[in-house]
Image 1 (cartoon, rainbow, N blue to C red):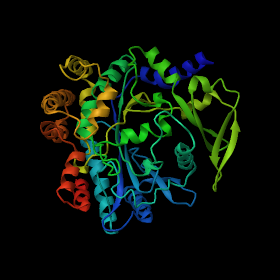
Image 2: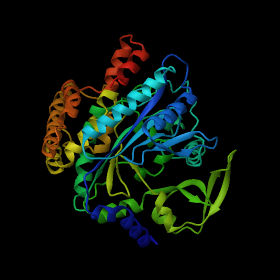
Image 3: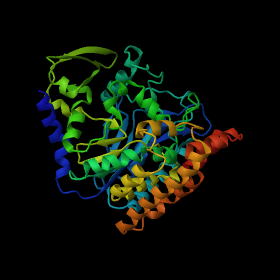
Image 4: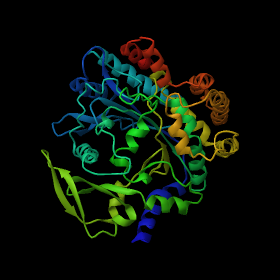
Length: 458
């Protein structure tokens, strides 16, 4: 069955990269819905905003929770999606395939402008923060739909299960953490080359894009990595973080993915979860004992594994190979809304510069010469006050060179898209990030609502 597992992996994840690629861009941006003055987000206002935006832009309501509240709407023409990610506190705009960043920016701006006008009239706002600043006050219940009830039950198992290093106490973290993700087409020929280059640049991304500050964990500029790693998603380290060791052939990618754990499946219109099992072992099991929500409580459900369960196998890695022939870059926090396209611009520009990027980072006199890995460096760079003055000086220069490579890649595309990188050059010069800037403002006495307004501007 282990060979069968690898063949299933090859068919689902590698074969799509062998078909002709069209070089589209896919962008997903999650944003917290925050109250302007109130104690917590009024989720009825959030739900009303999605419904009104769907009406205004001609989207079709496609998913409703068990109470009939719409939590997803889709535009048939563009493929754009409005949805709530895990919680009615976390609004997501997913842009369908776009050719250029200008197209993405225009649609995103139209949507957010309209939604925020609606929300502001009702005392709320979408803002560009990776952590909802009112997470302590909010209702952190998951969207009451079968899939999210499954996920809620799975994450709560950290109260029962054990793992090395333990679990953090924030079982509802997906309801108050927000990310900016981009998907880009990748070819079978270049898959490992791209994984290597973007793995090596992850520490630089931590410096540029950190924007998830959790006051309960004040050492972190980007707490999202820890929240994922020390949750039940991190029971099997292969499901998160980096490809370690880096794969240099597609067979090595397949070997790696066959050891990624499955933790959920579907049977009889039920969403089931269970203790994570590596996929190649999962197929060898005679039966699995899982759980599902029957609407009121979680109950046991015994079932037989099936090769078709590969449909629910995925990683939540910093670089995630999807079944669509794309790589999804997942590690960036939501950015201040005026800088929303910086994440996509960074990855899009570097996608054609992977060989130069790898050579630059591998040969850098500082970054990897001490034997550190992308994982250990990113973990360190995610923390406040982790860098010496000498390191800061060098990283300003190196980060700027990386951005020049990204700028070159965008220039070669011929769409005049390099302007979307401009905010990052300032961050590199000052070695700052949205999280650092927010902390500095708060330490100087600024009110959190001032920062919310700043990060909500388009």
